[in-house]
Length: 189
Image 1: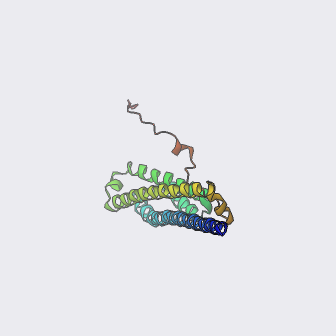
Image 2: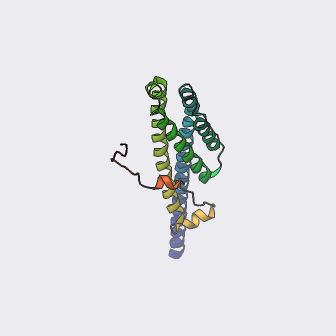
Image 3: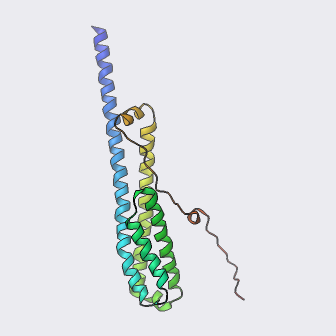
């Protein structure tokens, strides 16, 4: 009779362990999905701001048509990207295109002083910061999820329910991985 109670106790402990691991995996999966959704929300905000920025710049920099077309093209590609790798590549193209627009403003003092441009620039800068924070939050959740589904014995439960590793949101351009070069020497003579 004691053996039956011991076996029953072991079965109950295994069932409780299984439930705890399963619930932990569900929680991590949902937090990872939420973090990915937050990236989508912030990038949508960026996509909505870009046409306003382009229109504001058009009035001041009529001969910079190619630059503005590149921004619009990058936005369209980012909006239609599929998969984490494509989205990361497209988002990096937008970031580079926006840097070019802000650099362009340095050549046009009237544009730089324009209240709408300044406001859009501030909003885009804030949005870029939020996107970066969202990416870090997503990557932290992906890391935790991937660890949880790979450690033993939780990996057995993860395999039973088909959980797969999630891909981190990574920088795809080599320029963004390189250190920033600062030169204080004035080459102009």
